[in-house]
Length: 315
Length: 315
Image (cartoon, rainbow over all chains, first blue to last red; front, side, top):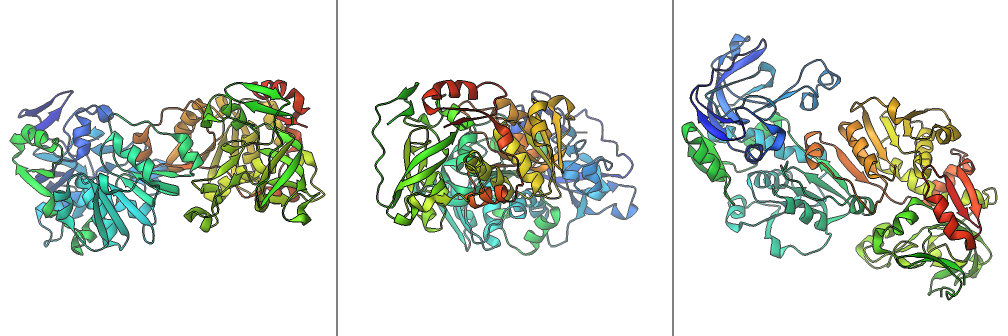
């Protein structure tokens, strides 16, 4: 099987065995994949990952215990719980301490011809959602997770970062009718997602005040966290999304003195991502920069790593 | 006037002028003072403080615009807002960006014969509360602030640190009927506050699990934060109380992946501190180690800085 592989160095390999599905798992032929900033961080040492990266995908079920799944077009929750620990018993597999995570932790991912996932993780993609849209369901769910954790309505919300995730978060929250300021470095990217309730600013246009009661850090850079700490109001909530191989200095004294909350935010529920696409609440196809074939994956990673890159897909 | 003074070095001075009360302020003759760990941190460089430290006190009003206050026995909120900024206008002077803080920021404190505070900051001490108890109202209010920020009932609560603040926090939360585990290094200190709903453990007795849904870090040490991060459940809330001159490394990736909330917690409302004493919900006099006269303040600071010290008072 062909795949992108990381073992300290990123390579394109043609000699990998097909993944074997365990009981309760489906074997999926991947149709389309998205490269996420987390994939880039993995290649800088994050998670000490070794194997096939990739966790944003859409594909067709080739085999499964539940035969009705076969042939279906699916996306899938990337967190695979053990099913037996206290977290799994309260249906919180996202936080199972023994979990594997597709293409991130202990489970080969989507930058291969095929992958396996537990059948219960799969969501059938409605016909009116194209593959190009479906590949955004995972990051859209992660974007919407912010609104599940923090009250955004009637708050001054600042989203830092006009990367793929920042653009999705800003749209999701504005669609909920929160007043959102999106601050990024690329006006041409921010222009792609103009909509009601959303104001865009460059860093220079942002007043140097502790003005925002909710700040979402999605820059993917150390500096983004520091900017967030300079903009968050006392008693404000700072939601952090960017896992980084190299991390910024955190001033716990400021957190105490200003009574700030720092809230970690990771994956969301796929139902929310699908609903956002159904309701046409967010623009996603506009965020696609280019689609490469899987065998051009190394070139695709290079493109995805460039400053200002939008979504790079692998077909 | 006599006072303890810090200008890079802690000294006892006999040549300081009496503080001059501004309009709306009261002049207070201080009767009794408590040394807090924050005072010790100030002498290590925290806040770049210069002046008279001290913020835990009880005293008698000598002069004020409101003549009915004169002669009254009072404690006082240590945060003095500007009265005009957006925070002050919503009655949140604790977070006024132009505030002074008694003995901590831009305002001489209580380790002097006299101090000044805005009249609106003062709370009359009921007769049945002794001076030795009253001097605990400020730290008790700060301890109870945790319960104002985080739901503790029906959660597994771990308090880290059996210093003065940790002992007050553990008691306040247990008095609220939360299930509290207090973890410290001095069983003999933890024994002082035995009560219902409170279990005490040494660090060795604490299982190395991410078991607690609420953890309060009150050790006053860098290591305490790291222990807290090892004990907090996914989606848990970690309340931090210890401002430190030298700070620990913070793993933002763990915060994101486990979706932890880090919540800064500082001062609380004096009404709560007074109410806790009224209801006899917490033991405070048991926490007094020794009372020194003000002129022995340097010796008192030395004692307060020793490992395992309980509350040192200055009369």
